[in-house]
Length: 187
Image (cartoon, rainbow, N blue to C red):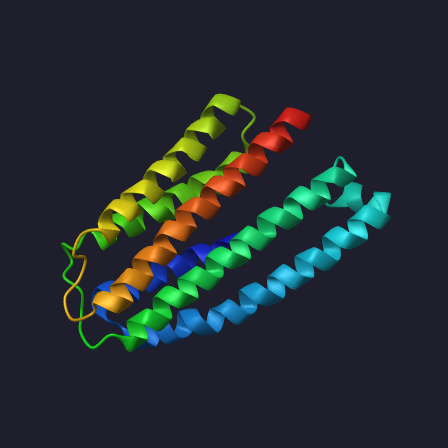
């Protein structure tokens, strides 16, 4: 699910940069697959709560982890929704976006912090995870600072929506890292 959402984010940014309608449409369609993965994972986690053997088989040490993993999968699903929203805004645009537009820096930072937040799930060093939480806040604040600037031209509304989605990706990534902190503390 993470791999699919990450590719959706990267492809939606490519579609934005190149004004590639085909890629944007593909991203929107992939969101349905993410939703199916989400519902499958919820069913598996619910089953793991009731079946200790299944829990052990899928690597869950404590039933409480099921709730935390469910939260993480919901956040990943929401990030997928934002990737689809970015693609939908590309479809509404009439022209390309200048490759020097700061929105592409925001996109790169948001994707990086998303990757770091997922990596934090395997991290046991709380200092490292806390840095990821702070990085996510910093990226979100960068997005807020861009909102006050002119980020586009004739595509202002769509670019504002893209910027908001990228900011939300960063914030959700911080949420994933915070769940990682909770899971690390309980070890």
